[in-house]
Image (cartoon, rainbow, N blue to C red; front, side, top):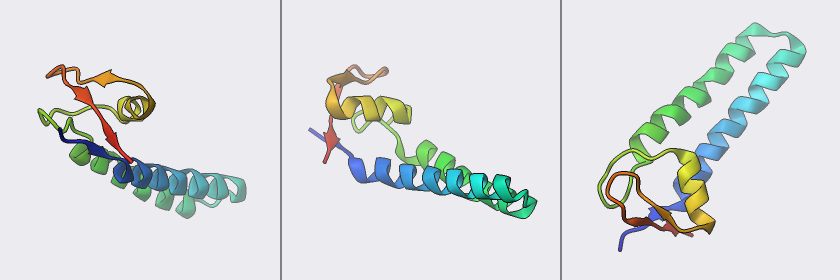
Length: 88
């Protein structure tokens, strides 16, 4: 049975954390170039989610929050109906 690697989830969280940090610092300093630069990690995270967040069985897209829920609970794929397991 194939499993979804947890390191993908951690990498996406890391990119979203960088986005939040840069956006908040740019907003506090009212520095527009920093706010614009903060959207680069957000776009990378969105593209990475579209490419990597797929069911390990059927290959259809699943949301990141569904994979996070599947880490601690039993979760079934919406498309193929198989259990999604997260590799620690």
